[in-house]
Length: 65
Image (cartoon, rainbow, N blue to C red; front, top):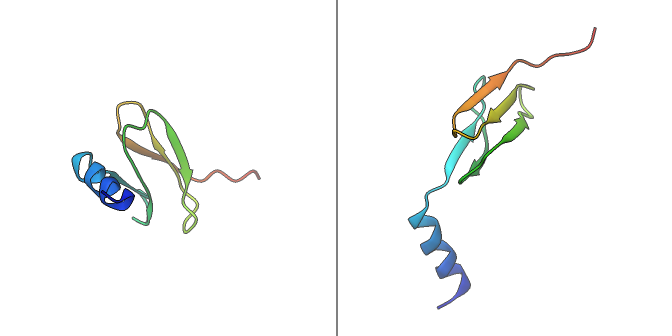
């Protein structure tokens, strides 16, 4: 069996979850079994988080004055 076929079978068994920006809904990536992740949206600058419970939260962009 080809490696690409094996990878597609593994993906179908464990579907990846989309990580979208909470402000502008841009797709930032996909994840599976992520304990902690922070990613800044390149479009709007919002910091988006995935925590151990796999809930997505966000924090507004903070610019130093």
